[in-house]
Length: 330
Image 1 (cartoon, rainbow, N blue to C red):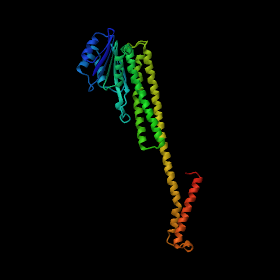
Image 2: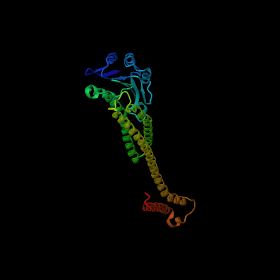
Image 3: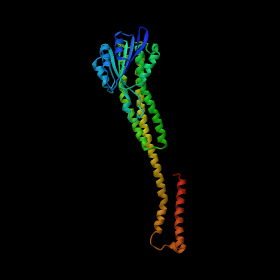
Image 4: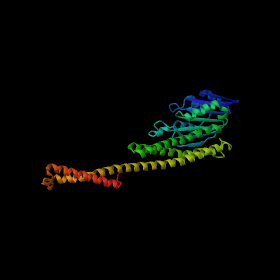
């Protein structure tokens, strides 16, 4: 699926036909943005002709679009710059299937044009496109403006993902302190796996934007380089945040283990108290259970001896309870 918006002779128009877009490109519009969503991970014949004949993109760049990999890339050609950046579009079940939340966005940028290619529908691309159609004088005022809006959304996706993880960590911490369960350990390990995956792709993304901060690049003017320096520093800040989250999840794991230990100690304490309270009962019952004639039979009789034994047991238990309470053992 393809769509384009362009500025030509002071007018802003949109187009969704690949052949028509190719004809528009030959007329050298002031600015054009083409977005291609690969259906079945492949380019149609018209889209291929548009990219190879009209824009004259190298076949290796097209190959990178068709077979995305999770590593960033920024490569300069004769008439354009090709970049591959990665972001996160969280799925509902992202903790268990985080790899499916990572997307690759391929960007071709040259004098007066931007072409974005991706294999899955990206909501922020649709939002930027609709805003460009509604306010073209603002959103399409320059090539740098379009690229900054796109890259900014890609980088911001990391911050949004980290915010979701923060909410999950806070909720987990409260649940663990209240009553630690086995499922909490599974959630902690899933979050740890997600953070490691984010760190793996985020650390390398920062270098993708370095090209646009250089004074000698052929795409972005010095006037607009500050916007891309902002993105570069935003990436650096995100990488620091990821390290902090890694430490937080390690701390949460320690909290879980400590909570489990405390809970286990409470159980052991209760069982110890019960065993200690029953110890006099075992001793007394063992004493009166022997097959001999006890002096107590002469004093209390056979029936009275039973009440005497039970009374001793109750007194011993009460004495232990009073002693434990005085020592504040429970």
